[in-house]
Image 1: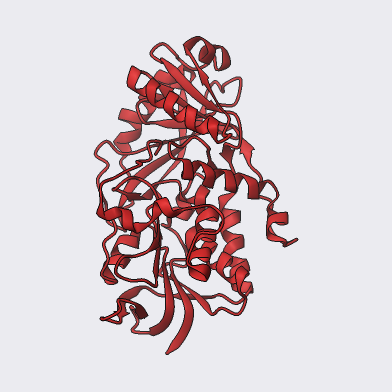
Image 2: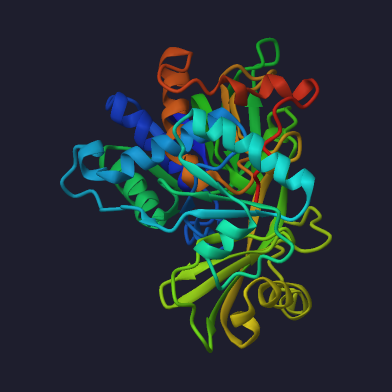
Length: 393
């Protein structure tokens, strides 16, 4: 039976980030990533829209985004590897729109926090919004918040591929398989090994749960409960008969629909109206969603989008933390050597750098040494939801 110091369940962007940060700190470690689907055809890391924003409503999420912005400014310098890719940000900003007093109040509160941390958003009343973006219908808008710094698109796939490739080059093993059993020491709660679907047994000292939408199922195997559910998200890429005269920020409409420029095209996203938990293999489309909800909302907000042609679309999953829509990061209450890294609720890719570094710090020293991520501890899940992230798209 093979033995590893650290076994990471999942080789998506969270697993790859954790592996790279762990092995970078100690090349002598024996680390393995177990991945059930090496094609990553339906992984959230594959379906992501790969964007970065500073406009969150909780401090730690803002700081995690700021860290990502810092490292991708010069990723090669950050890694010290001349072969690392350039993943620089393509800026366009996020534009949050409020259409009622409650929405405007939420934007002002978020703006105060974001500004205090140097995130750089600007508040726009209806007239200022119309002047800045004359192609947007502002009739019902009471207030808007536009990000002016470190918000946009970056090549998240290149980041993920690099971490995975560099980790394996440094000695991390990638195993194809699905964990179906967890072997725990009953009187201590510690995990001492796992069994894969093909009955391969692997011994380990530490386990990192980076299983994405399946993190809840893996937690149950270890005797723990995570409030992580898979929720569908739909992405649409379309062209406009009359392209806009300027780039469109990633605009979050009060309807919940969001849309941005995507080169010469446009990219929109939406949740289904019911937004219920779905099975791991449920990626079925809902064609009526585009015709009945998304397109009408786009045309109402941007009149030029009345004449558009859908080019392609896809369905992905959020691994949604139903407790407070924040990450779950840290040792489980019943398994001291199990570190959960899950429940990112749609902003996992942009926070993967900070989370992977945090996992490494917890395993190596038992505490967070750089950015304090203790607000994400699984221990909070037994109480009442505290700081709920209000800016989940």
